[in-house]
Image 1 (spheres, rainbow, N blue to C red):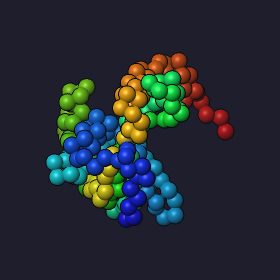
Image 2: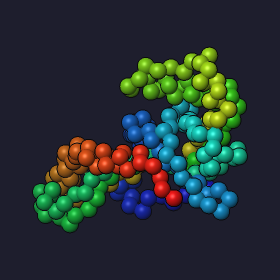
Image 3: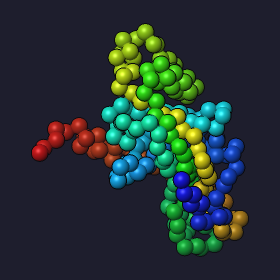
Length: 208
């Protein structure tokens, strides 16, 4: 697998503790691979293991993984981002877009054995129970039993991993702090109306 480090070294981080914490806070990953002449991409929450690997699961009909045993992928975890206008800085600067992300190149093993898939589902539920749900997988639940053959587990082993934390570090300390504060202050925008419109459109019958 080819390695292409971030071309802005001042924004690049290889601090494992910071990267691990980032993935824990923002587990939803965009996973892109090149399969049989096509680029395919899926959005999948992934969870870290003590040995450095990660795990997740997908629908068995997902064309990116269906019929595959091993594949390589580029994985991106996205965090907050914001447009930073000139007046956000202490000294007037050109505008930019700041963001936080973690990029990973990894080898993926696709798991289709029901017992292994069940273990991945159980581990996923345990991770989520620490956040906002007390749900645990009951392997005796008929819904779980009937779903297992239609779920693929994923085991991800990173080859390279780096944080890409663009936070105006190339500016003076006061300007960097001001840009960071602007990013933090602009994470609570009200998108309720747009989401209502989007939900309404998405639930309308499709016309041919």
